[in-house]
Figure (spheres, rainbow, N blue to C red):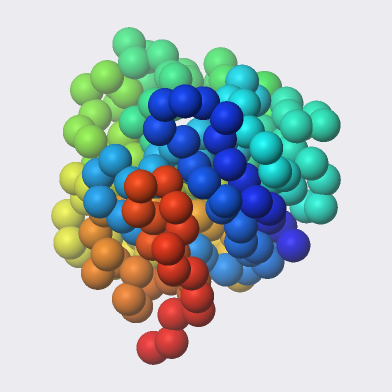
Length: 214
């Protein structure tokens, strides 16, 4: 099992996840849908942020993610509006500065991914549109050979033609790299034909989860 959550419940008195349990094998795309405020981004934060208090367990490749959180992050490609980059620098400058923090980083792979995303490596990150930022961040995640991709509302701002190409890229990733992808979206229709498993979050609870049958 690449990613597994077992009875994960937040301990905060504020909004938190409740009794979240599911497993995701390598080579599949999981889509998580729900209205704004349902807990979609919160679910990703439980994986990414070791400061969040919860009971239950989150496993990455069979290991408790909190036993060595920094090593776990090395295997995760997080694509979100919350990613930290140097917005005054170009994409390739960001790659050179930040890529060295990842053990599997490959600059040539980043350059090829940017070409696939139809985006210049010389473009200043702060001048990118929302859709271009998602493409750049996805290319960065691909360049350090992530095993688990966490994609937070990434298709917003992409034109319909490239959106179709983007999902083809995701399919190639899970086939060639034995990776898995968790895609969160408020557009439930995106799950119907583009993911292998789908879950619906409502008020921090996973009210449904199952295989998508086309």
